[in-house]
Length: 112
Length: 237
Image (cartoon, rainbow over all chains, first blue to last red; front, top):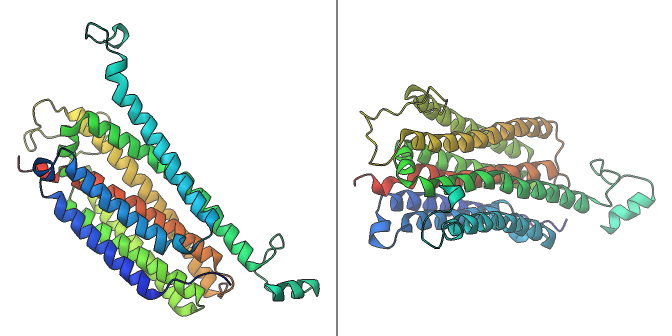
């Protein structure tokens, strides 16, 4: 078998990192980072830690780090389609005020 | 894999677990795991739509989402996060002992994973019961936000708070459903492991179920901060 067996030591290290990440997420949630840094800093911090935790689970618990290129391709596809869905939806919502405003500055007739 | 080919030519199946449409065990294992990954990529889109709804409504009603989110119990949510991470570790160990062919420990770790899964669902159930008592379950005509007890900031409407609970119950409900299905799969795995089906050459079902279970854990890794924590820093304003 060419299958790579991940050692128990790595599993426990990742487990520790996940617990640490959870603790950090909870701690940072109660600090007003929005006020100290920029609006949305709390959300960015929480999501950054979550993405790191998810990546650790995918790479080690789900063995992707040791998997074939085809597996890598499918994992990236999942992330890519998700990115497309989010980016296109937000570009729509973000541009609506611009798209539907009349030259006089009012909201277009059909949106009132 | 040369050995198995020789055996095939002799007309003898090298491993009874090898399905006839695969050349060898490695190819069969790889195909199975790839199938699960394709399913999980689809699951990313399935949950992705709900995450998208969450982000859009949170942008639209930031005040209501902070109030509603802060009414959840972060201790319950936090304990459940730890419980799920523990279950992911024990699931990874169950796969490890399937790969190394230690049948007894494989069964033990599957059972421990199931126990963590049940613990998660019980805690989730207690939270749902709280929401039921408080009339926070978004049933039209039944949902109620007690303004006397928890006043709403200026410009925040109870219906906007209700929107948070629609998303909360849709996301945590679907997540819990995935866990219940996972528990069913693991019951089957324990039965098969008990019968001695899995060997270091054939452990595909254990590995693939592990992938599914870890994915459900990842969904929760995002749900916990988004649903329970993002409004906490505003609580004392």
